[in-house]
Length: 357
Ligand SMILES: NC(=O)c1ccc[n+]([C@@H]2O[C@H](COP(=O)([O-])OP(=O)(O)OC[C@H]3O[C@@H](n4cnc5c(N)ncnc54)[C@H](O)[C@@H]3O)[C@@H](O)[C@H]2O)c1
Ligand SMILES: [Zn+2]
Image (tube, rainbow, N blue to C red; front, side, top):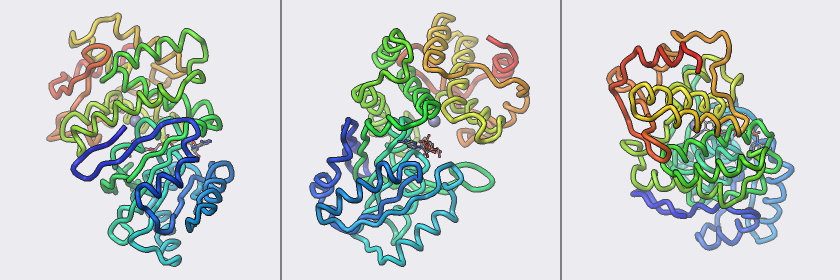
């Protein structure tokens, strides 16, 4: 698969054993400078060190820096430590930053790659399902600010995205499930065939562990196709925010770290599907079908007990997707299609948040 945007063209590879291809791919891309491998501490011994050794065996100069696992590392202070490490090691414009880890490592290392020496080459090597189908694709990089997530960042397209599906074997089940929420989202907004393949998996039981590299590749393709027509999120790319308006609010209301991102998005998709039902855009059968799939992947559909509808509504108004006070809702019109709506009456939002179904 290829991303082809005004800012560049690059390959997205999703396959088992993909990591072993990195040295050859670097050569193909004519990237011969020093490699600054930034990894999540959870993948340092199992994947980063062997990868560095493999690159060194092919005569690449490699430096490895592990950042502590967890969203807390997506921070300017950690970026500063990476800048210091690179500058002290005499980084040059022709060098390459490689991110190995989930969306945290990718966003952080990508931001550092975008800004050090006004930008050096960047490669994403995602090791979470969420990162493989979502965060590694499309060039958004950044860190969090104490006042809000992802508020400091830059668009910096990678030169390559290399997803080795074997690395998912060590991912905790809850993290894997969280990634499936984004895969389900891609099926709903754009790819009915993907949605059906996911439904077929659920027939086997323990759906989350019966995946194939091809399925993950198909899910990634949805994002690739969307970014290819809308790199900077002015139109179609907004569809990727399905489930995220309420999902982000629920994630924040729960307190960061309580619900995983994908869990909050799963609840958000269910509630937003119910909004679409209220607006006559989908029928009850659609809502039930989506809910069955979400739950078959071990994901929730209901708001945690004790969470107030008013609080969630107030948080949605702080969302980045609000423009001139109007919320841009992404609502499904059926399996495989969704639209942007800015005319959703407030009572409908209150209704789905306060009635359990
Ligand atoms: N740039 C974008 O377009 C974009 C899109 C969506 C999300 N994001 C960002 O992505 C981040 C979330 O990404 P994530 O869900 O991958 O979280 P993450 O990077 O924090 O990884 C989740 C957990 O899995 C561990 N881990 C990663 N790979 C592993 C492996 N192979 N084996 C064992 N453990 C492993 C990590 O240490 C961490 O504890 C958020 O910061 C979010 O803002 C960015
Ligand atoms: Zn998401």
